[in-house]
Image (cartoon, rainbow, N blue to C red; front, top):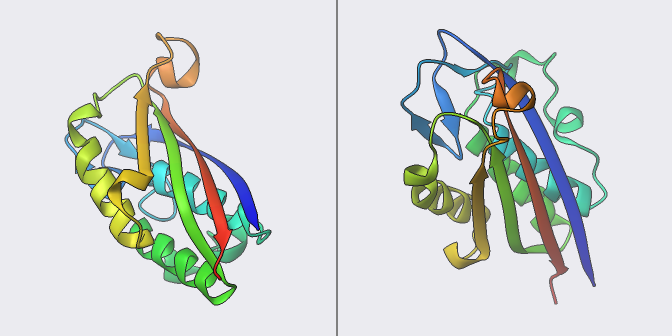
Length: 159
């Protein structure tokens, strides 16, 4: 049995926060605002994993009303999602994702993001794909008000 999940996340850019994407601190004048470290890429991947398994979304599992998640490293959340999938007999086959940001340029950081995510999910790096795109200065991402991410995950039942 195979199941597909889609995840989407968005956070506004604000001054005074580090910009964390895929578990990588990226030099930029602004960071993403959120209860956790606001890593939109990892949040989208978590949502895709949870959705594929029929387990709701990241907010249901790690609510922003719970102070234990305040400023938490989203990689910890991703590892917890993976543990839940394993308990239910699911294996992550692959991840395909897209970061939507006008700035900063994230391409130089993609290899480290892939290493982080593949390590946290316990899958080969070649099974994690991350793309980055702009919106040609259109919309909130184009005006550099925020960053968004999409992710698709394929789960397979462990034999």
